[in-house]
Image (cartoon, rainbow, N blue to C red):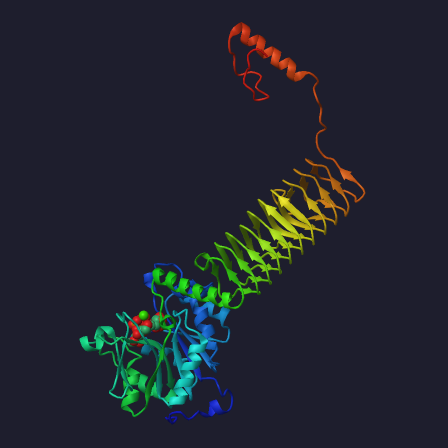
Length: 503
Ligand code: UD1
Ligand code: CA
C-alpha cells in the first residue's frame, strides 16, 4: 500500500479534479428508532428538504469522484430517495449496525481502491453546509494532515465523543462518552463525526479496528489514534457554529433544528432586501426564492420551490407551496399549491388556489374563491365566493359573485372556455363544458348549459312572476284565524313572519 505523504495531493487531485476529494462516505444505516416513525428518519424534512438530501447536497459541494451512502435500516425507503435526489451516488448496504468504523468499511467495499482523500459525514446533520466541508478539506490540506476532524465546543457534551489533545494542542484521539473517565468527560470539545482522511490512513486504520469498547462496536474514531501511532498528523477544525454538527435523533431535535434553519433563512432574506414583519411566525423553506422589497406579514409559510417577484406582498396567514408569484402581486390569507399568480394580481382574503391555477397579470381572485386548473387571463376578476375548476378565462372578464363552474358530471371532469370581456352575472352555474364567446353576457342566477355567442345575453332561469295582492290576503287570513280560534300555528309560514295581531 502506498502512503500519500501528508499534504501532497494525490495523482487524482492533480489531474481530474484538483479541488475534489476521492470519495465522500455518508453514514446513514442507523435505526432512528427514537423518531417513532414508520418513515425513515433520514426522510424527515428540515427546511423542506429531507435530511438526507441536505447531507448529499453538502457532500456534492466538495466535488467527490465517488459519493457513497451507507444504508441499512429502512433501506427500502432510503435507497429510492438517494436515487431521486442524488442519482450520481451509489449505495452500500450495512446489514447490521456494528459501528461507524464498520459502516465506513461497508461504504469503501463498493468503491474501487482509493487514493487521495476520503470525507466521512452523516445523513442526519441537516444544518451542515457544503462550505464547512470545503473548509474542512482545505484545512486538511493546509496542515498536511493524515486525518482532520470537525469539532465544536459545546456547553453540554453528554453523549458525544470527546476530543483528547496533547500538550501542544495536537489531537491524540477521540474517546466515546461511555468509554471516558471523569477527566475526559470534562472536555467540552466534541467530535462531530465528520472527518477528512488520507485514503491510505483510513484503510490502514480500519483494518486494525477491534470492538474492545463499551458498546462492542468498531469505532471509526479509533482510526485517529492509529493514524497518530503511525506517525501521521491528526488535526481538527473547530467550528464556531455547533449547530452544523448537531444530529437529529428525535422529533424534539427535529423541531429545534428546523426552527434554527428557518431563523437563518429568514435572516438571510431580510439581509437580501425582504421585509419580514414577524420572523417568529414566518417560515421560509430552503428552496424558496424571493425578490427585493417583498413584504411578508405574520403567519406566512413559503414552501417548496416557491418564487416571489419583487415588491410582492404576502400574508398575513398565507401558505404557498411550489407557487410562482409575480412582481407586485398581493396574496392575503391564501392557501395555494402549484399556482402561478401574475404581476400585480391580487388574491384573497380566504382564497384557495389549487394546482394548475394561473392568474394573469393584474387579475383578481377574491374572498372565498376556490380555483383548480383554472387559467384566468390578464385583468380578469373572480372577486367573490366562486369555484373555478377546469376552465380557461380570457382577458378582462368578470365572473360574478357566487359563480360555479360545474366541472364534474359524476364520472368525468370537463373543461369550460370563457372568452375575453365576458360578463357573468352573480349566482351563475356554468355547466361544463361551457362555452362563452368573447363579449357574451350571462344574466345573474342562470344555469348555463348551451354555448353563448359574443353578441348575446344568456338568461337561463325561471322568469319572475308576482302574484298580485297575495301578501295582503294572507295577512287578513291569519288575523281572522287568530280572532276566532286563538293562535294557530303550523300553517302559512311561507314568509317566515310571526302572526301579528291587528293587521
Ligand atoms: C458518533 C461518534 C462520536 C461523535 C458522534 C457525533 C463513533 C464511535 N462515535 O457517536 O464520537 O461524537 O457520532 O454525532 O463514531 N451509523 C451507521 N452504522 C453504524 C453505526 C452508525 O451507519 O453501524 C451511522 C448512524 O446512522 C449515524 C452515524 O453513523 O448517522 C452516527 O452514529 P451514532 O450511533 O449516532 O454515533 P454515536 O455513537 O452517537
Ligand atoms: Ca449520534
